[in-house]
Image (cartoon, rainbow, N blue to C red; front, side):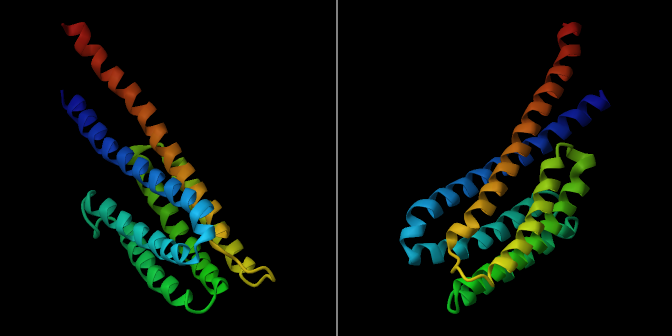
Length: 200
């Protein structure tokens, strides 16, 4: 009975995380779609989108931590919240300078947030499982950040198009994590239901 209660509690927590991953994937996909269409045509809209992206990440990390025992118990998300909030302000300032400056800011943010996301994935692996995609996403984010910083010094003027693939990979990893948890929880739910079916 206790093991069944533990399983139900685990499935409930996992259900929240799945929803969170799906929402984050959806936001990133919408952002990428706008960046590749109207964003590349309207610089003013692109500027707003570049500020919104890290701001959304800050808000998402806050909701994630607040929904899982608070910021104090989730230090990596709390730090990610601070990093993303500072990045939002830094992007707004960098936009008054140049897109190269914006790309550098995004590069530094990608490195820091990637490391923190990797740490969150490793910490959650025991509790939720299916965190390998989040770990890979964090590692790739850090590598992408280094590439951004290097590309910012190139001869070609960067634009929102340079950042769109980074957001697209983020969406992919969030979606993979959500689907993986969905499949795993479906199997666990079936296993839980089996003994109940036999007892009736």
